[in-house]
Amino acid sequence: MPSDKKKEELVAYLDGELPDEAASRVEKSLVDDAAVRRNVEQLTKTFDLLDLLPASQASDGFAEKTLTAIRTQSSEPKPESTSDDAPAENARSNYSERATVWGIRAAAFFGLLFVATTGFNGAFKQNSEPIDELLTELPVIQRLDEYEEVGNVQFLKALSESGLFDERDQAPQD
Amino acid sequence: MSSATHQIDQNAWLRDPDVQRMLRVRDDDEAAFGELVEAYQNRLIGIFTHVLHDSAAAEDLAQEAFLRVYRARHRYQPTAKFATWLFRIANNLATNRLRSLSRRKEVSLKAADSGPMGARPEENLATEKSALMPARHLDNQEMREVVRQSLDTLNDRQRMALLLNKFEHMSYADIAASMDLTVQAVKSLLTRARENLRLQLEPYLTGSSDRGSK
Image 1 (cartoon, each protein chain N blue to C red):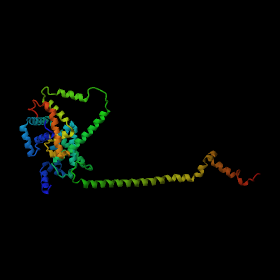
Image 2 (cartoon, each protein chain N blue to C red):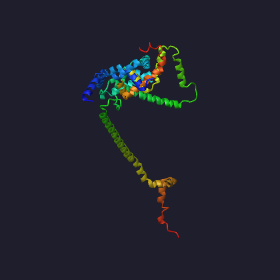
Image 3 (tube, chains in turn green, cyan):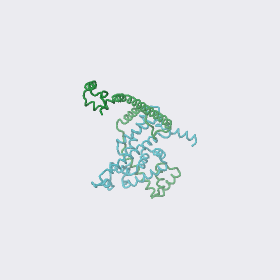
Image 4 (cartoon, rainbow over the protein chains, first blue to last red):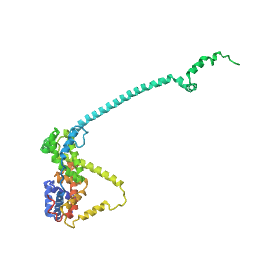
């Protein structure tokens, strides 16, 4: 059984990848060694058996579908480059893309901040009017339970004008 | 490398007709892109089918490979044969797809009932294989299945290197560039792949000397 190094040489020889000197060594061993010959024959035959695998055919319209896909892509914003891309222009285009993205983010942030501030001020102003009204009517609110017991403001007025409960006319009693 | 040698190398790539087509694609020549699709669609789908055993998935990946080529067109600069670059993209796509399929398989195996519900997958495969053992002469269809199963016993990298070597007739250097490996690594991969294939198929070699070559 040939060593791993020897096996590598045999396979590379079969693939035409050996330099001339190494190829000559292999050819000599093929002449001298029956085991090597048998090994090479088996390697060749089993490799050839791969031709039995069915050849693949693209389905009808594959090319057209692919062209449609690229046309659709062309009308969409360019995605970020991938590691498969030819590297030459990647660095420059990446910088400008990043600058654009950060610019958009900054604009969105400040826009949101503006809307939030404006909205808050507007909401604050709108909410302060009912509060002012409440403050004005606070004395009434504080005595609301008593006023509800009386039930009738006209009656209260009449009672007040009657002088019945006027404290200034009553002499102190010992 | 001297500038003169570098210039010679550049010219070698420029002589590749597909590099010329790709340079036209770079200039938004859609017809040139269509020519590349026609030239490589079956080859790409073939490689992906052997790797994924799913012709629909193979077509999806082939289309994705072409889309990536198209997206990169404005930045294209020929530093290798066009096929080397295209199959590098293909190798990346295949690797990613196989990785995600194997993760899904791990999840579904964990979730599956582990109770004995019949023959285990290994037992089924053994039964299948014994039906195809060379006790009798196999017809081409059976032999095709044996060959396909033998290819499946290779690991992903061995299989890809072998497919590029066999069906794309790529040199070791081109395979190395496509798979992001050294030439020595490719040599080792191919040696192990060919040796594994030999061991799997050796029992079937008797009487097969008249088939294999189309």
